[in-house]
Image (cartoon, rainbow, N blue to C red; front, side):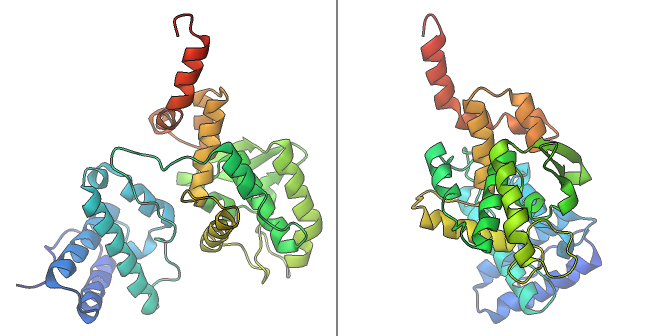
Length: 303
């Protein structure tokens, strides 16, 4: 019995990294059963991604794969194993210098029957937004990023990929390049706009080194990465004593759910989030169901 995978129609580049993955798993001393399962999971991802090769996949694309019907139909145990396989796969690529970054960082584990993670309360969000030390340039940057993420419901890749040119403080809006290179305009809100102005006036000049088009910069003056921000938000959640699991995507969920709770139209939320299909946005009605039931009981004549 071997740990080989049934051949599938995938790019040759993916075949090569799958072969390297097989050698990696054998070197790690994993059981034959585990090696076969991990290879099968990686090969299934390669088939899903074809004709693109595995090395070209981004964090958002992996998240889309984990939310796809072929994955969501699996048992929770199988999904957990899949995520473990993907972490092993990219860990090996990084060790062999075949990948520049790990797109598995920050992936939320899908929950069967519960399409969204537990939502943050408005009090939790306020505590999280208050966590950065705004007396420092880095703290002021983090404050502006958190405020913008919650004010606009951005994907983390959209947030960290923002150029300076995307920001229109005078007009009060943000030009966002979303999935599929689809552009949308998102209103900033006064609070986020004020913190962005302070960041631009007080913090970014301290961080910038040379000409950098990125809006948000690291201490070294380079563009902020998704991985860096993921670690930052985890640290601030711990600092704010938030017990729920928090990731950048959690604030995107909170943005949509809190808007819905306060009476926003679902189609407006769809446009703000950049969803191409309203059915994707309708998932938030499950999170806000308790609030909707309370409103019904309060306002319906037979409630």
